[in-house]
Length: 213
Image (tube, rainbow, N blue to C red; front, side, top):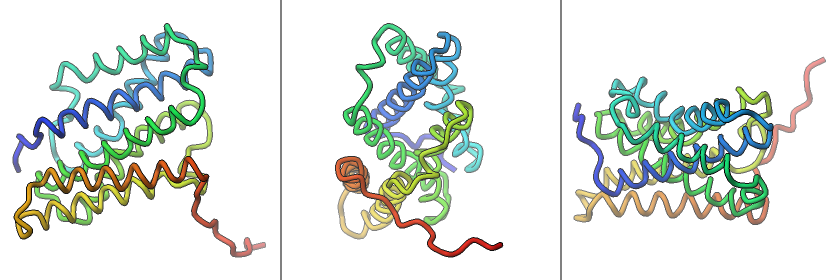
């Protein structure tokens, strides 16, 4: 198990994902007209929720406990949300930003899991968990239906990102390229799929079986 797993590229992806997810949590609290304390809580839970679950599952130190910047970034985004109109964060532009955070976190989660010796399939699942669980916790706490309960493509882009990241990192030594190419390809493809889902409202088909009486 190697505790030193991040590179400057993954460090930046980590901070970007934390900030974007924390902002989505803070904005949700603002829409619900909550206090700043609640807004800060939502920002922190959304920003670190997925990474916390990932680290507990792979046996790594919980990342934000030892990093002095993570909680500060979450609270800083809460401050931004507190002092700006909610209307600034409405519309598809913010959804695209959230999609970028989703892809960034999926890359980071799967890469970190591989670095800790997790096999490829569970490592890819760690990428999905890192990208999605914070938002799920946010929605549950807010008492609203989670996005994973809708046919909208959200978990699927995270899964695509994670699978491409894991496959690319495994193949990189054989291809004679750096792992950075795997990270970039995973991020680009996952973000492109999420962007297309937002733009054209793509979704998965729902179960069509008849319910039992």
